[in-house]
Length: 433
Image (cartoon, rainbow, N blue to C red; front, side):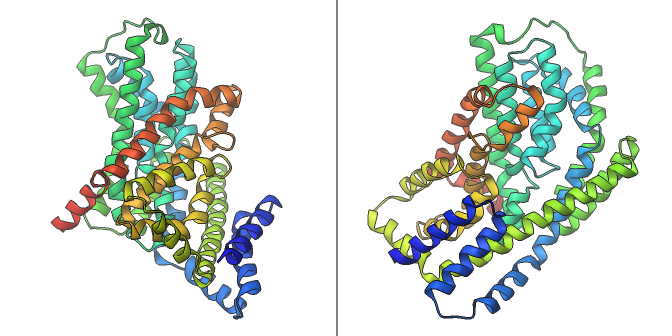
């Protein structure tokens, strides 16, 4: 078994370091490994697996959710969120720092993208909070940490990809992400409130007060957004629409919202369509490569060998997940989130299922470690987004984000010990239906 594993790792290192696109690299590793180690018609298998993977009906939702995010990115959504949340957070310990967390949480429910969540919320809140005198490290750290919720709170493009690759229910994945997403948001807000109490200087003196009437009028500004969330997510959870149908409703709603705000020109619409097409094509190529590599590893017997090796260590299910978390944190230093998922799933999923964990639960675990990768230097994408927004060096942004990294890592360990936190809601809703 050392020869197949060495061949796969060697080809992967060669192709990834050569600058080849990740999707092409995955296809190359799978095809090369089978050509060298197995006597079989690789070309026919490649064509069949590629076609089956990219024509999956579940994938129809992916370009639609990407397009919805692109359209909303070109609206005044971030301004509306900031104006609506300021009156409600003014009396909390930490005051407007909570706008970062709440804004990212709300925006995550309609985009499915970590980067889009961070940049859309951050382009308004970062400037406003720094101008008002809030501590720069807390502003950057809370924005980078909360921005990762775009992958965890549904609808999530990463959940769609995981659902297709693992052949699990996308709707159940969406439901499973709700409670962990809200828990992390609450933990972030708790941390910000505690820091503000312990270090009063991080929050400027601001004695502005708002009546209930002013708060309610401010909240009216996000009613269209709330309506869009209810249409998209409510239709799926109520069983009225599939993810693809709900995504189509979301696109029309986002388009109507953008037109109503007069924030979308014909040029902007064309840019949104082109960007969505490019993103979807890139993801489709990666999915095809990942599916083919997974099939190739199955023929080579690598997942079974890895599972047997882990079983021989005698680790408890909880310790297995702690070890996997450590491995994923290390890999997150050199791989971005999507690559991290597709390259490790063929080996990790069989081991985790054999240990007794639910594939739906592992999907959420995987999303959590991908979120950690988003804020792990040197390739954490959210760190670069913050650098473009603030102009600060990466090392300072990484240092500011570290407390939020620790919070998420500890929460990931917690859900490994208490997996029911993830599976309770989807199981309950399945029982009701």
